[in-house]
Amino acid sequence: MADTNRQFVLGGRPDGKPDLDAFELRETAIPEPGRGEVLVRTLYLSVDPYMRGRMRDRDSYAEPWAVGDRLEGHVVGEVVASEHDDWEAGEFVFGRLYWSEYAVADGADLTPVDPTPENVTLPSYLGVLGMPGRTAYFGTLDVVEPGPGDTVVVSGAAGAVGSTVGQIAGLAGARVVGFAGTAEKVSLLEDAFGFDAAVNYAATEDHRAALDEAAPGGVDGYFDNVGGPVSDAVLTRLAVDARVAVCGQIAHYNEEGVPTGPRTLPQLIASRARVEGFLVSDYASRFDRANERLREWVVSGDVTHRESVVEGFERAPEAFLGLFAGENVGKQVVAVAEPSE
Image (cartoon, rainbow, N blue to C red):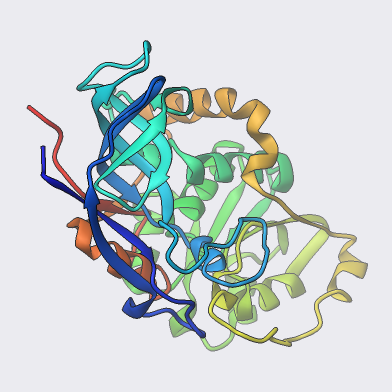
């Protein structure tokens, strides 16, 4: 075990797009677990777009960090020492911990991780088998409600949530169209994730015309991870009784003012569409069932997954900033350490 523990804290509140100055790396002593606690060594760390909101000095659905606070995040790790009856050294766990190499957690707040089934890996518990997968599961099945004959459009489709949304909608019998930002991601959506069509929004000046070609019958369901011009276009192509799930708006997360684009509410009158924002935490009472179904789909190969792995704990800020440059395919994770032999 190392002699010291490295951890990141919020170094300052960014104006607009964050840079590396927002992150401060500190060294501390490795903590010791108390009664009922577990010392966890981080193997993989999740970085997620919603964390940008926690860097602001105002309330959102997630509590803001104060300057100097340890940055929090989901972790897959290995138990190093345990003062909890349910955990032993060497076991793999998942939990909400910190951007740190070691952390102490209440043993009751950790869940076991098993990387041995077919198609399951340790990083997948931060993606398709973790919060992004559950977000896709509930947002698709409970909000978008796809069925045979529907056309479902997904923005940010090559990300951890979007790629899973498209596959779940496909399993429900829908035709699925994805928006992504590179030709390589478009190919991946169609060839690996089973989307029926995909659009490179960065190479498309007329998003409405692209939608008319990819979804000539209109859009019955829209899963929005991005906002911005793509969403402006999709809302003009909604079919009657369409369902829209608003999950994220990453196109606007770094803007200091409120952007004013095309007024979208009139588009909902003729379509009689339902637009619903949601948080995955609203469905916590049903997480066990979602985890079970997602795991079944992954093991069977009905749902595939990708992780973009950035090697090295010190590169966690770089991995986070890469989310806003569209560098990731699937879930963006940081590989911090190798499991013990």
